[in-house]
Image (cartoon, rainbow over all chains, first blue to last red; front, side, top):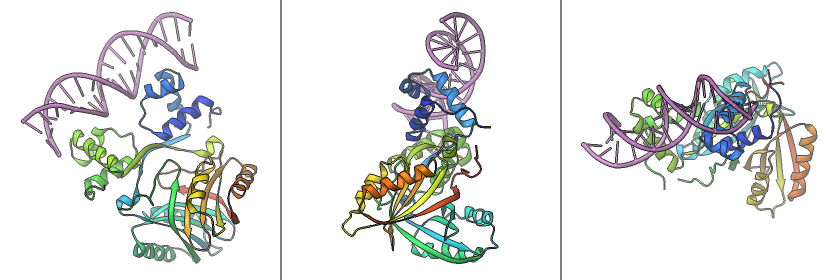
Length: 156
Length: 156
DNA sequence: GGTGAAATCGCCCGAGC
DNA sequence: GCTCGGGCGATTTCACC
């Protein structure tokens, strides 16, 4: 399933693409001193091996009106299947990411919402749809994510 | 600074690009029933307004050998500036994201590391470089992030 | 926002190292 | 395995309506 481990050039190409996925093959080729054909072969291989999952745009959610971020730590009844919470949370547009956790809480959900009212509704929905015994919500003041993004710097 | 609020077509284009940033202009144009030139103008505008921050690749970090994820909640001395922790954490390749928090802990750091040993080293480095009074680390069993990715499904 | 044309790029082929 | 070169189709990009 997985090919051979990546060499330094593969990692270099990955780093360049993470900076800007819109680089042309010739641009990348010049930077790693390879031909465009070789670069393309490597990128194709990385993609088919699943190292590269996809290509996306990074969006400033604050400028879209979703300026509030929060984390909520969830605890379930012992009977709840982990898959279930992941499956239903995934469908909520407010959920940015879901983490199942080893420890005192069972899951950590990264939420992005429009405002406090919206946060409250989202938390209500979470509590309603699962066998949750407790929630603990952390409000995010500012955030930084690898590959820039300044929700705190983009006050409209 | 910020242009006019985005219309439905802008949001549609954004959604399409988030699914796959490599879509061609003509593909997008067909889906939103516009000309390629019009789509390009909108994308350019979204980019210069800062709504689109950048274009990147989504990488399966587990396949790169960084299969362990964790969160660590940090508490600082009252004298510590928030900027400082963000600035130094940002430089660590292990830090995936940093959140400053309102509540009992001051920051939440999303870490991605190779193994447990690496996690320990990273936590040590965090503790060494800041006026941290306490850390509490949550181990991630599985994670889901918007825009697919199954670190748990990619066991090599 | 649409149209059309030019420049660029991606892409596939083969030959050769 | 990689490079080089050619050629074609697709795409981007631009000026203009």
